[in-house]
Amino acid sequence: MDEDLDRMSREELIAEARKLRQGIRVHRDSSGNELCWHHPALWGLLPDSQDPLPTVPAWPQFLRGCIRYRQSLDEQIPDAPRSDEEYRG
Image (spheres, rainbow, N blue to C red):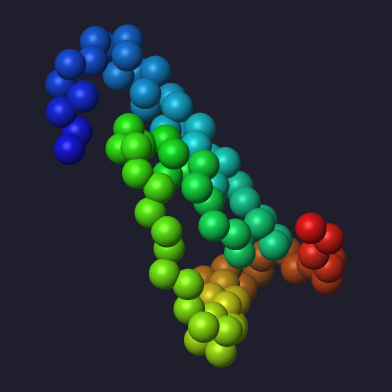
């Protein structure tokens, strides 16, 4: 799957690493409501040219998952800043 790496020069590998690091940083630095979104730009950094459709949970299961995710943030980073800003997308 990653045979393309074997054909890259040192300079090409460094450029690829920088591109991937930047994509990871953009994803990592997501905050607020951005955390809730599907991030196809991150998957687009891969050389595989597939665009798989995600399996989307039904609303009750989705909302339970969102609540559990938000609870996990309280557990993992209890001192993180909080916001009461509404989503304005």
